[in-house]
Image (tube, rainbow, N blue to C red):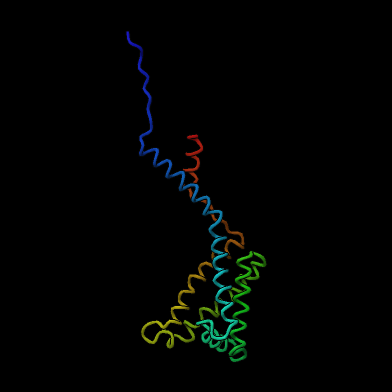
Length: 181
């Protein structure tokens, strides 16, 4: 008689590749969960610090005239011209430093909230000038600030205690990888 045959089953290559892909995605998901909001916070800080710094040098910022006009209008003429631009520069640099460093973050986010009113207000205050038909360069400059608003909201949510957690699929893939080992 012949010896009983032993059947060895192997996972098909496609299943192995899928499991490997799932493991990579799970690891990426965990890394993004841990680091993406901090990277967003720091990159927003670099943007605010960079654009704020330009305003300290007359003529260097393409938004200088718009910043002066906006703050002059919002303050009912109490802060105008170069003072308005320097005040904007100080606020933006403070916001940038707090976002980059994470120090005094809640204070920086409070200043950011106030600044966002000023940053977005030209869309209402000067709509006709900004959209004489097609959007002017200033209108485009202000309009892209919607991204800054959204990023600021995410960073503020984290600073106030909200947490980003990996999704169910990432947790399941991670468990599958551990159980296969």
